[in-house]
Length: 509
Ligand code: FES
Image (cartoon, rainbow, N blue to C red; front, top):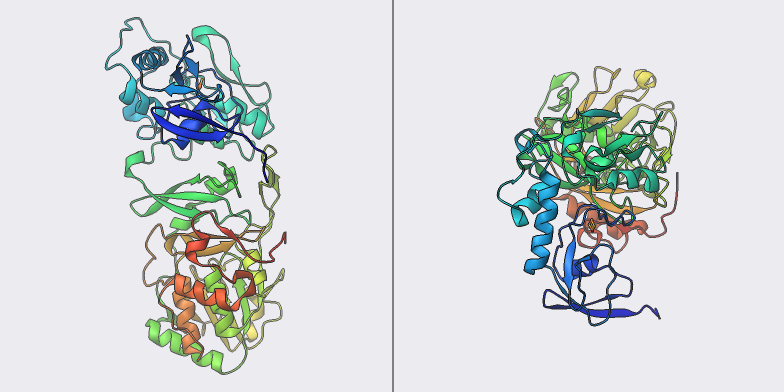
């Protein structure tokens, strides 16, 4: 039994009961009241520097900063009294004195808390008539540009770099109206997790160089997904404009990545939009219908056992269907350096640069540096991107079936090619290195005649005389959960958008 004490209080007329030590701002969230704030972020140490979160507490003569004031029994908190509104309006007026009001050309417009709170509570005009302060924008290194004139000095970026990234690269330089964020001598924002300061900045002061002038926030469609670039499985939002992915942002999940995403994962998305895709089935170098290509591939699989090579970025659903169609085989994982985020336990850019190596292992596939080295007569390659495979061993194969997004180099002319969608073009699940099964949703349409990987492999299983009667990725997952012990009892509902641990899964890399 927990001996945690709870405190009862009233916020905007609503009764709430929260653990002792909770701040008024966090308690208000549980009551459905969002108190305006800038410097406060639940992933960072409290600074209490912006005063945007002032509220009125009954029987207290002064307004209280709700981010830095803990709840007390019987407290009555009012967020929208005239006194509190006037104070916050004054804070906004001062923050905007030197602000350039350049929303029409600011990347943050549409997702800017300075815009939002000014619209909600600020003045309709400015009383400031003097010339505004001007400082040039500064390249902070990495993916980060600092637009000094928009900065409200909330210091979220300074605290993140020092306390979470473990690199005291940023500080507040100068004082008074000359104050701005500065870079410490011999530092820049090339830290592998530095670009999180762009997400943490509540205004348009720290912006991504990669995303600069690409799209307005309101033009973007947003889809819940999982970063495909390493085995950590950070939760992300894929942001698309005109069906192209233009930005990847972290989606918070305390069990995996909290609020963060590494720079390598964040910026490695251009391949999703590549236009040199395999878009139509091919048989012996000629375009073919899906029915004809599947019939040819199924006949080959019926002719003998295949040497199976899987991609470690295939979904669990696709890997399971591959196993049904032709049995388990080998897979290769690209490797890179590890880069932990020191302030968050168990969060790192992982050496395995693929999303689903653990899923492949749970399914019975085994790792190999060169999985085609011992290829036999019938070879089945299935993977998102198979272009880094050494195909020189395929010269002696009688039939090669390649199920992929782009055509692997060096395939024999008599190969059967089946085009599939990449992870952003279909739904499915990945299993991260801790064994957490996580869903990703479809963010853009598949290209040409490409089919979702589960659909292509279900067709192949049926053509090979196995059970391939599935009408959705979810139907495949349900069947997989019945037969694979690691997934027993799981469903898309139980996995949800925050994931669920696979049974008996452990650290594998
Ligand atoms: S959010 Fe409370 S002082 Fe800044």
